[in-house]
Length: 80
Image 1 (cartoon, one colour):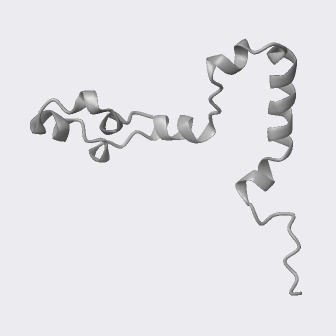
Image 2 (cartoon, rainbow, N blue to C red):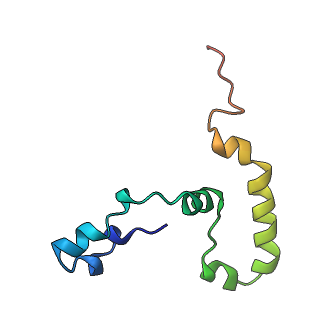
C-alpha cells in the first residue's frame, strides 16, 4: 500500500506532508489488492530449495486459511 508517511524522506515540508496524506484518498482497488495479496521477499526466493519449499508453504497457507483468518477456529472453547 501507499504509505508515504512511514518514510522520513517524504518530510520535505508541512505543505507536502499534508498533500500526501493518504486518509483523504479512497482507493478500493488498492485496498482489495492489499487484502488479497501475499508478498514473498526476493531473498526468500533466492534460498536453496526455494522452488520446492515455497509452493508447499503456500499450499499449507491455503489449506489453513480459515484458521489463520479466525484464530479461535479449531480451539476447544468448552469451559474447563
